[in-house]
Amino acid sequence: MNNEERILALLENQNVMIIELVTKVTAIETDVAEMKQDVDGLKKAVAVLDVDVAKLKGDVTRLSESVAIIEVQHGQSLGALHDGYKLLSDDIKIMKPIMENVAVNLSILVPTVTSHAKMFSALKAI
Image 1: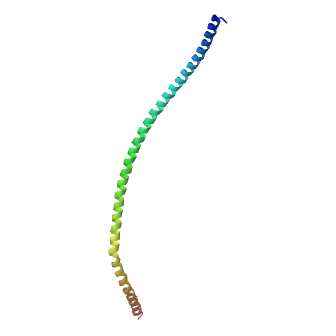
Image 2 (image 1 turned 120 degrees about the vertical axis):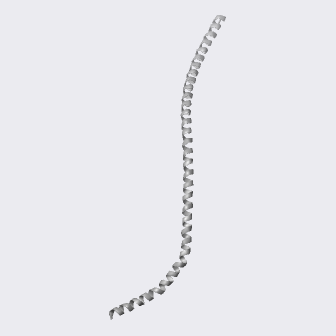
Image 3 (image 1 turned 180 degrees about the vertical axis):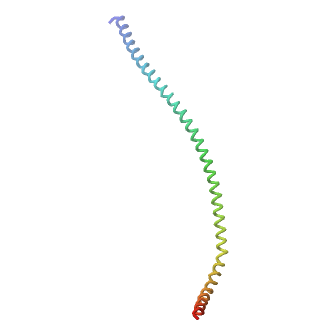
């Protein structure tokens, strides 16, 4: 093989390598273009998520405020219920001896009233 043939073979080999390289670069360019589209899609999705997160933050803030209001209102209601219970309990403590006295008086009055009723019945019969 002479020099011209060698140079020609080398040039053909380089031409094949260049064609392969161009094919690979084209494939890389296609992949990069697809990646750019994917990144653009991701940017749009992130923007939507940012809006959703901002909305959620607002919702959580309003919910926290509502819960705080409910806690205060229920705390006040529970305090009032406790105070009412204490008043009733105190009234019961005061009323208990009175009721015991009434029960003692009734236990004395019932036999007396029963006795009087029998006497009135006897007197009516005359």
